[in-house]
Image (cartoon, rainbow, N blue to C red):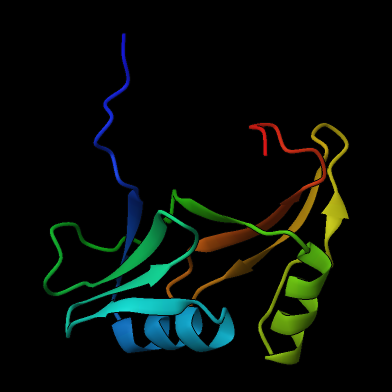
Amino acid sequence: MKAMKDIEGMITFTYHEDIEAADRFYGDALGLRRVMDRDWVKIFKLGVDSHVGLVDAEKGYLKPSEDKPVMLTIIVEDAEAWHRMLTERGVRTNHPPRESDEIHMKGFLTWDPSGYVIEILEFLTKPYGE
């Protein structure tokens, strides 16, 4: 089966009761660049063609739930530097970056104001090529 050639990227949308708190977290704490800013939806650029979208609970197609069965993984070049930056900004993490025993990577977790888990991940050997 041939892959479609017209795919331009991906946006993962998350749903929030307090979109302004989520907006401050992704913009100020994580330092991501907002590329769309509407009352009910904000989109932040992660990489060349990857984004995370924040949707207001009142207007979104889906509704937030207490259980957050989604983990946003941000792949970075230097997990240690990301941990230092977030710690300096007062962002709670589960621990400093740790290497995995099974995968050649290291990382840590944090949480956005709505409870979504965000994994900051550095691949020490890239499993998908350069």
